[in-house]
Amino acid sequence: FTMMLVGSGNNESLALVREVGVSEATFVQQMNEKARELGMHNTSFAGPIGLKPENVSTAYDVQILLNHALQLEPIAERVQLSQVATVSGNGHTYEVDSTNALLETFMNEPPYRVIGGKTGSLEEAGYCLTTRIERDGHLVDVTVLGSSYPDARFQDVQDVVSWSFDVFEWDTN
Image (tube, rainbow, N blue to C red):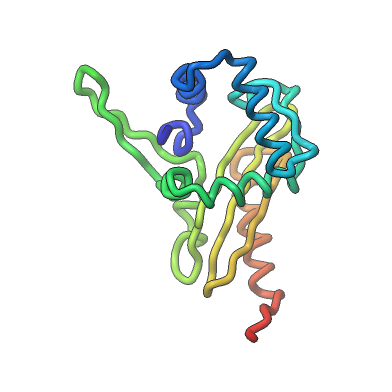
């Protein structure tokens, strides 16, 4: 579960499906049912790991999912980790870096803090990132879809978050 969230492990995602004990088709059906339950009306899952071009969504729906996921402590605590280590059955230690490079930028240093987020990429979708950033008790959620190269999604989020905090005035009442 941790490797799936931190390192975007596709094999780990498939292991989760097996652990749940249902077929892949049933798991995907349950994913789609949960998406509807959450109000993600423009999302359709075709596979459990996001590598099928038939998986579709919108930035709005991805934000709904981010909001829900960050309310779940087992997810929220893991998507803040910049690296995890695991030990194999034969005692070999494997270190896995987070795919969320924002965790190693100024966006995760005072006065900012990365609350959590998730990366993704697919040729048809480009490089994507959804994340929540906090500064001075205020939250900004950003979803970037379709960036042309991996680092562009992080730069886009940094630009949007910096701009948001520079120009938006929160009601202090």
